[in-house]
Image (cartoon, rainbow, N blue to C red; front, side):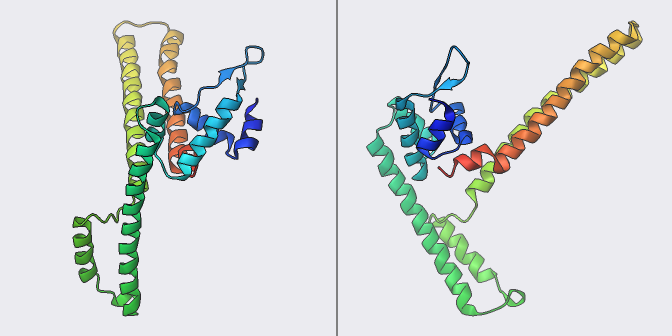
Length: 213
């Protein structure tokens, strides 16, 4: 079965299907004749299970553990109930805070935030979360990608400097020097392009789309 057919049967995009494959949740074999992925009915069923659990906001890692038999589905559901109840309590607390602000009927210039900030500190001590976890995850992933790309670029620049210094110490043909310098330059360009694509995925590509399922 081709990926287009799977997309229609399961109701998720090809991007999501490939994302789950990258995460190790799905391992379709390739057709030896044409090299395309060949999906079986069992893999379609597996995708439907993954879709169900993702719609219940189960993390990828938990689904992987369930698949591997390291976590019982029943235990995972009980843990998810606790997580969702906590989120519901957080929403109720924040809703109450919004209601209190609404009842004041004051405009932004007249807003006195001190009492509410103090109340929020107390609420956070009791377990309420106001920070945007998804946003923090995005920042952390972007930072990690930029650091890795920056390290590679610095290394390539170092190689270029070594080639140039070596040329001044022991001259070699200009065309050969250009060849040695061209390789790090190509790598730097490739790293920058990969970084831009990675940031695009983090901000609104595969991972963000996949989180909806």
